[in-house]
Length: 232
Image (cartoon, rainbow, N blue to C red):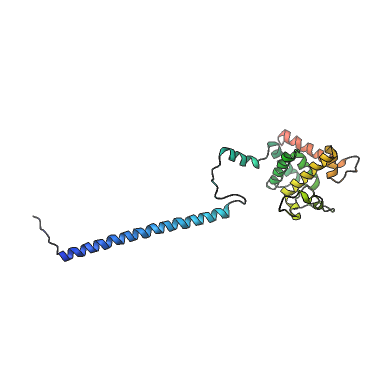
C-alpha cells in the first residue's frame, strides 16, 4: 500500500528556488575552478619561460625547437667535434703538460677551426702553442707577447674580431685565431714554412733556424701520437 504525499505549493516553490540557487552556485564554483586552472597554467608558463631563459646556455635560443633536423644536428655535432688525430694529440698534451683535458678542448677546437679556415695544419698550431706558452693562456713575455701563441698586441690589433679589445688577446680562442692568422701571413710572405716560423718567433736573423726546428720537432711528436692512436 503506497501513501501519496501532497507537497504544499509554497514549499514546492521554495525547493525549486533552492535547486536553482544550488545550480548557480555549482556553475560559479566551476567557473572559479576553470579560471584558477587557467591562471595556474599561465603562471606555470611564465615560470617555465623564465627558467628556460636562466638555464639556457649563452648564445642558445631557448624558444627554438628542441628537435633538430638531420642536417642541423650533424652540423651542430660536427662544429665542435675534434678529429680522431686531434683528440689523440689532446690526450697526449694533457699528460705531457699536465693540463686538464677539459681546459684544452676549446683550444684544440680553435686550432682545428683556424687550421681549416687558414689552410694550416692544426697540429702545427698546437706545436707553436706548446713551444711558446706550454699551454698557459695567461703567459706573458718580457717583450709583451701574450697568451697561448704569444701574440704581441700592438702588432696584431687589426686581427681582433669586431667588438674585441686588447684585453681579449688573453682569451684562449681569440689568441689562437689571431696567432694562427699571423703565422699564415708570415709563411705566405716568406715563401716557406721554416722562414715563416722564424719570423713568427721573432728570430728571422737566426741562420740555424732553431726556433723553426723546435716547433717542427714538437709537431713531429704530435703526428706520431696521432698516427699511433695515442700510444706514444
